[in-house]
Length: 341
Image (tube, rainbow, N blue to C red; front, side, top):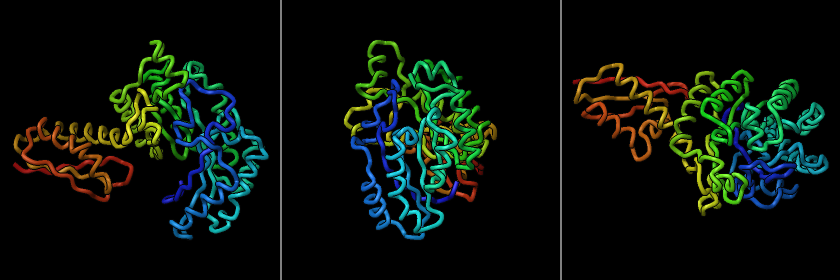
């Protein structure tokens, strides 16, 4: 993936989707209710250009719907509106998100002509029974075919997965993550299931037909999944749904929603690795410990309200615990230890 790429997001809520998945209400998930127009593209880009340097590498991203399932004339209209922006820098590009069963070789060829460099596929699960229970409307076979289409077009591939869907288990979610790794995407997004008000999943939950994917369980599971992707150096570009005003006002009635979900997951990973290291080193009681982590990861190691620090100090009877940043590779958890009696 191109580093330090500034994203200009544009939302096409539910546009192109012929069916509604049990968990989905894109209007509340994205906080947008009006489909984007060509004029919106131009205005949004111009506003962004006032805030960003012209030599920044930028990318227009169409999120929230199935872009290639929108009528082609509408797709082309939106893409055409982005062309002046692309001409500002040869590295500027467009990304679109879509369904695995709505992508053909003709689609990718046309998208490439318009400057699209990245395609995100809303896979959600690589277990057919989970896809059926979630009313996704596509199969695992469709996913593999779409991945092949993207790769043959030499476009960047981002795969999106969800945990805690109807019929899902921790083992199935882990299996989906492992299969993602074999597909070698350029990046992934991980979304734990949130029960959104007035969706079919909400009704299923109220009737007792669906068990909530609670926050603590989702944190534990996503921590395990993240480590799989870290070990194979696949970037995780999003973990948990973006906070919206609607969610803050009660649209997220249950499930694994937290505005800082990603931070909670990464803090969990750091805590487990630090605890394992401290246990392995058999640190003496009343030691002064320094944990070294990659730059920018201090808050993740410290935990929410420094909960990791206080828990580790109590668990291992430490006199003090400090966190120091080093030049360890970003995106990897590298913890070193020093202590004195």
